[in-house]
Length: 579
Image 1 (tube, rainbow, N blue to C red):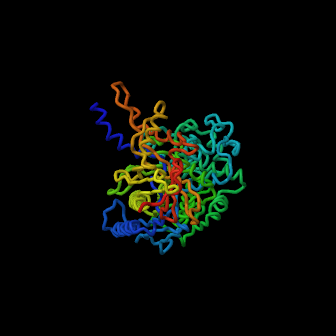
Image 2: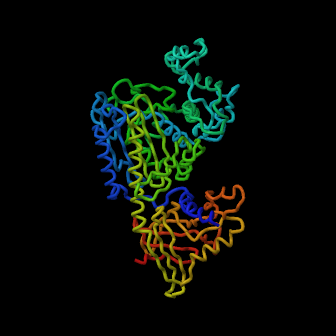
Image 3: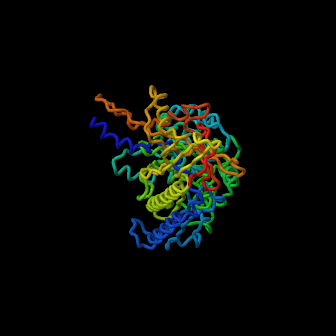
């Protein structure tokens, strides 16, 4: 008994960790107009000013690092960053004289994200063997290319080698010998792609070389980062469409989205942010452009982020939602890999004075010589963050983490402020003026986790909320988890236009989500293994009353203002706010 009591706080703390994936509250509307967000952005700008002027100690020479930061929100009417910051370092004497949203940077492996986007909009079958598009890969004695699909390659799960040729550091041959490695003949190196020994690979050389390379892992087993896979993806798209990679970027990405600065390197010197000393600016990446050789700008990447977040890209909304999903674990409980997303589930990203809960970030990092970049989507807030740097490569993670934490924290506060004002209140409806038909519902915002809670639900004086939990436990208790008295609700993002009393409104479908009770302690080995198993998703839509699900409810809003609430399973009609 004592042990069961001790476990109870742990189960409560886990409640919101077991929420449905996605937004906890409606995404912030008109984020750029919110005083909370504007105040946070001004503070972040002051922080970057202090950092760039040397008033904050940082482990890199600030005079060498130029950077751009931009943020967009899904509900913007256009994709112009709702906040941006740009800094041109003192030592940057080449390239553009003024860094702004249109300035070009090398974006490194963010190119992979663009390559995957091109693949998705190309109309190709991602789940057939890649050899159907690239027959030169057939006949391997090492890699099982006939089992490798484009989807695996796009998600780093194909086992394709990291590089071909590039990983042989020929210029270090004397160092290897000094360390005791045996001498080797130059014929043992790949015939192309080895810096300092031979030239760039042709498409045929790349395919033959990779065909006969060692697999890193069995296809489909786990993620193993591969640059070379993305060069092959571009070649497969070319085989399907007849367009080379430059044309793919132009026709399938830049023109449809209105991008003006995104193209394979080299870019335009007059628009470029060029760091001091030797860098990768001006390099021709050739066949490797699809894996890390694009140039772009904060404005262009903001347009891409906005198109994905607002579901207005060439992909359908369903395809976009499916794209923003993990495909494999990355080796830890908070990191997963997507296509080609580098996904982090942060436990401490919301503001210090806010409820702490996990927030999922879909990101792609990039790096080239003296350039680092980050593209991040926080879809549950409809927020996109772009950070581009030129100069000391150590600076990027600090700038990015500062921007991400401040901006996401501000977005979270705005979402909670709006929910407290518009959703966390009472609603009432009387059908035909009869007291026993009156349906009343009240909602509160949980101060501990920031979720919306159904505090009460009644009809004609009957406690429907208590009866609701009883129905669930008696109906599903034999083969499903028991639920507690705490019932939260979450937006599903199923919305449609509607008319109420002649007024046009938006109809939002939410689902009730009861907290699941942890199994009781039994003095047997492993009896508590299931206490953190998130089973709430298994009870959704299970029980209906006259064809109406007992967990489906509806909010109505006019612009950002909530005007009504409906409980279809109680036939409540549209209920009005009590106050």
